[in-house]
Length: 217
Image (cartoon, rainbow, N blue to C red; front, side, top):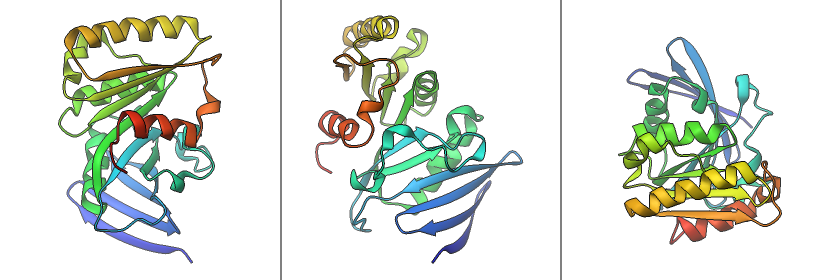
């Protein structure tokens, strides 16, 4: 059975539809209603903190367009997963999303994922919310060299396909810049991988993330 709840927060109206471990939330921001789908990990309990991963999805409000890399069983990874079009919205909308997550869930570190063109937005958002976003997963990695110093205290994982020659070179150059600054980062090259790394969907991706970013899940 679906449950419908409403919350009032400063500058934020949230309508929630809950089904099992997944819920759809609509944030009101600048006269827009931005849909989010939040999936809780299986066995979620309120006395434990969970890592959060914000990924692109729900383009044009379509709930059938999810984040391809969360896989078919997104509640199996031990993370709170957020699918939304927040990457394409006014950057101030990200603060509303972060406020909602912090107010309603047991959150630990918060990471943002971007793939293909969205990886540019993921780094851009993280460079603004340096005190609220703990790390970035870029598939491929594409930090802006002009703002790279803003990532000083963030964890960075760049994932690129071996055959994605142009983006692999960009990720390798980015790693040199990050290494020179002494920032925590890792570049993962997927053997024989292309630009869209569908082979990483689900468990393969979270195996990488749990090793590189989360010491205890």
